[in-house]
Amino acid sequence: MYAWVWRRLPGPWPVRALAALVLVAAIVLVLFLWGFPWFEETFGLNDVTVG
Amino acid sequence: MSRRARHARRDGGLPNRRGPVAAALGVTGELLLTAGLLVLLYVVYVLWGTGIQTGRAQDELREQTIENWSDPVDAGVAPVDPAETDLGDGYAVLRIPTLGDDWEWVVVQGVELSDLARGPGHYDDTAGPGELGNISIAGHRAGHGAPFADLDRIEVGDTVEVETAAGTWTYTIDESARIIEPTDTWVVDPVPGQGAGAEPTERRITLTTCHPRYGSSQRMYVSGVLTAGEEV
Image (cartoon, rainbow over all chains, first blue to last red; front, side, top):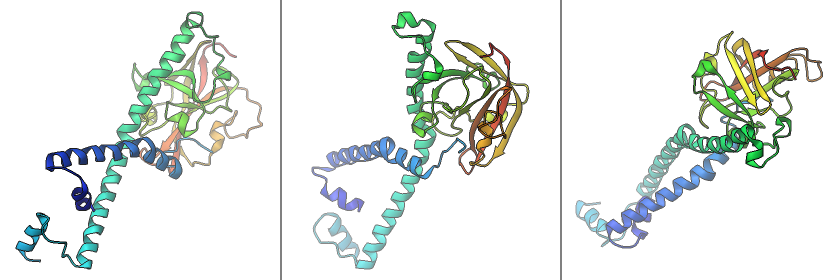
């Protein structure tokens, strides 16, 4: 899976490494801004109210 | 696969010769690693990421709320009536000296998760500060700045201050932290334990949060009674 992505990134290895970092950062950002908030709300993992 | 074949594949020379079982195991391993990373990332999100959002929201609320209160005319807005605060907007300032001299949070109106992500939230169907009844406020105990992280440290006799544009009210705690179930809505009744219809004779405050700290299978609350400030 990861090797597959690596093989599809273009350019020499420093460029690939940079592209991989950007890719990881983008995924983390999407998770922090939308993925995790959705997860938290949907499964009520952090409820503090009664009712 | 021979050592040479592996080398050759890494150089991109030969096609992948792994058998289907090995390939499936490889993918499974990577998926498990990914799942582990996701769980770790989620912990980072809860303990740190959510705090950044909440910190920003509090800064914004401080500007919008407190500065407008001190001089509404200068700020070009009408003096705020707490009861008419929109959901998610600054409702009051909460201070609990027991938790630190600089422990000060802007309470927002409403207790939806989106409100609580900005700071402690006022159950919008409960009393206002200084009013007969039971002003009830919920706050996170882990993540989102964890305003009520140390709610269990509050003891009988400690004070809780609520400030709005109209004044400051001091409540004195008479029930320290108790564990309840998520369905125990009676703690935020106008007269705790006597149903929504009961006629209040006391001016009370109730703070709720989750229990255990890093879970939400139960709730915890502390409660107090008005001891200083104009009765409304």
